[in-house]
Image (cartoon, rainbow, N blue to C red; front, side, top):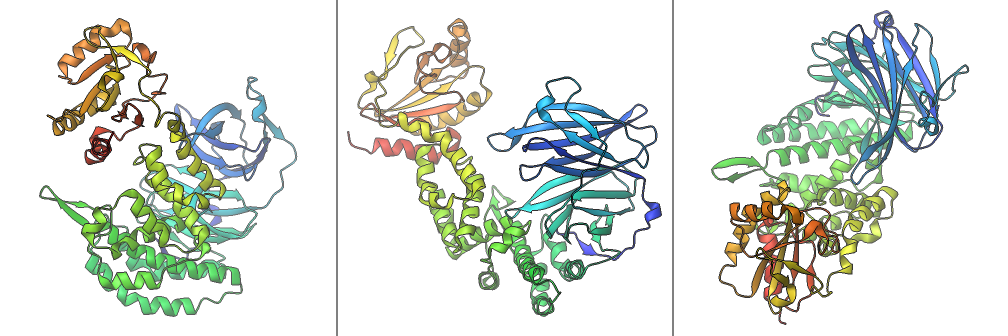
Length: 581
């Protein structure tokens, strides 16, 4: 959002391309994506897309009218996937679009199973409050995708996107809007805040090359202040959007601007007290977030003679240690800003810089999360910080033991619906493992390369690491070099046994034997015909998968970290090797 500044511009309505308004409702409250496409001659192109969530069943959008255009509307019903919404089912409909004739549409997804059914053109218009945001694109040299977004829990959620082809210069959004507040216009390069009320009409101009420039032909006091702030913060924004920002140059500008920012905030006195407080929070957040992003993007570490951007804050000057702590935001108002979640997560991570760098690098995930959660005192903000950590560490968590250590101490903050949903989705991935951990591992027998039946009972008194794989599994083969390194590390230790269990079919036994020879796989190699004896029992539906048996023949872990994690998987093994029988 950092390449933004203000430019007042009065849009010439005569220059606008003729638009047709589509307005309607969906019969069932679900998540939908509505896509409009147009065909002109032998060329087809996207026109617009609209996203409906479960909070509303209304939609409205303006599409450019092309005299010989053939239009189509595709409606996709979405369902909850593991990490995001996914397409469930859809239907496509031809739209007859005429000049200066708006369409009022009713969609009923329950009828999609009947060919051509589910969309009705209504005679009477659907009446609800909308907002109009229109304008021109300055010097359009390339096509551009422009989105209108709302704020949901400190993050931006797209409501509508329009696709503006190369050479076009106009755009128009008509969006249902029932609640005043901050909304955003977004391109790939930049974001622009707008304070909107139901039935507002705002005109803007965009610069496709340098980001969004904005103003209004009938500017409200709120949007006037937003434009002033964008102009004032421009030196900070320009540096913050660079891939490799100059920390020293930014610091010089930052220090110079602080008195001006303080004076600017004292002048925020519109007739709208609700806006005044929210806007002051936005200014404070921007001021802090620019610094946090520059500090992170300019943190580099040397690896193998090369400099790489670090994942954490490094070599932070004392000036920032003090000012970012003094100006920290602990108000839930940040959840009304599209950058609120980013700020919350970055500030919590920044507080780790109070520790010495060497100690920070040794922190386990559980220790990091504990310190970060402790940096936020507001329980509502703790809840959404927990959500961001669940998302960030999702691929670091290997099993229930790690989930329990890192996240269960904060279960009390998983009350907000979206936070609870994320918490349970990760918890449920591993909760079933508790049915096996601590139970006997002596309940299966499999043939080895010579056809001899092998039971884990033969290895009682030893630690057993099991690699579940298959000849057709690419990720399994990718782990083999790392597994060899782990095996080499424990070479000569008679208290550990490495076992491979292939899920190949019995009929593919020769392929299995050939790969063992080709990859020079060591240890005990067993064949589980399509998972009939082991894989299905222990729900090894996704491979590679690593299991660990303790010296007493009980499952210590049924979802170990992958060998590529190196020291992480060795900690699991060492813990069992050092444990007494």
